[in-house]
Amino acid sequence: MILETADLLDCLLHDAEATEALARRLAPLFRAGDTLLLTGDLGSGKTSFARAVIRALPGPLGEDLSHEEVPSPTFTLVQIYERAVAPVWHFDLYRLSAAEEIYELGWEEADGEALVLVEWPERLGALAPPDALTLTFAYEGAGRRVTLAGNSAWRQRLSARQGSLNSS
Image 1 (cartoon, rainbow, N blue to C red):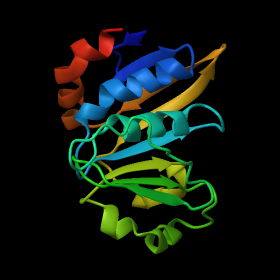
Image 2: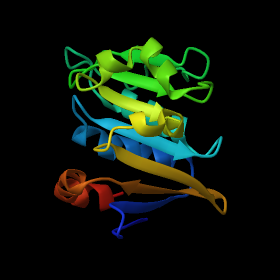
Image 3: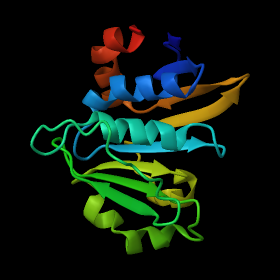
């Protein structure tokens, strides 16, 4: 169930399949230069969402990569995937002890040139891009609630896609 609120979107997701379905519906909106900040407790759906976005995007030659292995970057801290829209940089910052460590992972190279997915973005502190789309995942009963927040440009992009977000 997706509701329009003061935030951009508020979604109640009953299971992992619903999280993946939302990611697949949102994926066509994303492009080079976008940053998605995925916040929430351990196990709340951040990695499932990121994996589904990465798998939903076609490869550089338009190939279907929906079954590609997409490991969590918990230990490697960053994984890079070649996609038609842009390279996708998937960061997991849980193990960072200082925001400045992000530069050792190639943050400057990814910023502006790639689609960037960041789990545990609170570790970025002031380095978090102000124009990012923030997705906050929270437990709600047996499911999850995800709230999307962003600037007016994100509101316009999401509004243009609203019909397909409400379907299925």
